[in-house]
Length: 263
Image 1 (cartoon, helix red, strand yellow):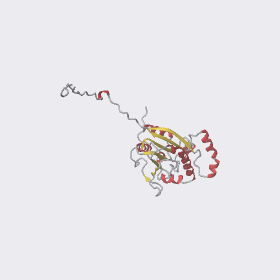
Image 2: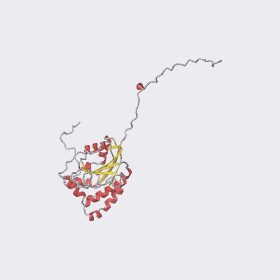
Image 3: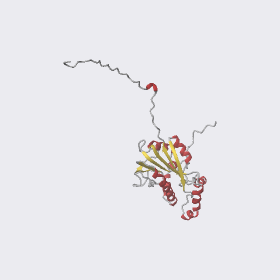
Image 4: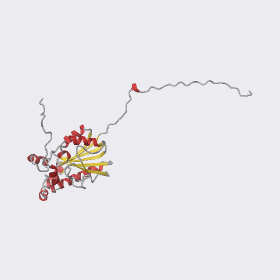
């Protein structure tokens, strides 16, 4: 059996200041169309998730995707550290969320696994923060898509979004099962390449139609929903430890015949 190497990078290295490139691309026409498509899919998923607290962790742009959620308390967290004042409520590390254990009903990771240093640590901390029975929603780039195919020819490109890691939904679901999650399912959409011009989008509109009909799981992005499993706690008492019934002696009252006075 061949032994693995010790000195290797498990994930692709990201270029410096990649948050600035991501924010610029997601603020452009192609990024706006992608965010609109992601919001449309999430608006059909999040209304079915109930609870008290919802958190969205953004790695690219501080754009709220929880508009369709019925949860009242929503927190928008940014991990880049240079978000504009007033656009987010929280700036934190995706792998060290400042929330107590078992406190979040809905946690949305928006491309956090694609652009952060340690996706394993992000999922571990997310599993810690989600309540038992709560939902973890992962949005990521799909490697099995037209975008993933074109990315093979631009693997060394340092422009956004080509330097994304593109961790597939099957791999993410395996990681989540190890962490005690049950995967409900996955949806995908946006079958166009990341083009910017409106003319090119109109010319390639047939790709979006054919993709939604013939390869619905091969969109540019995927949305994976997983639930944190609840372990039932049933106390089982060992037969040897069961308490035996205790017999308490009760004195028998002696019957005394008394004559009525004057009898």
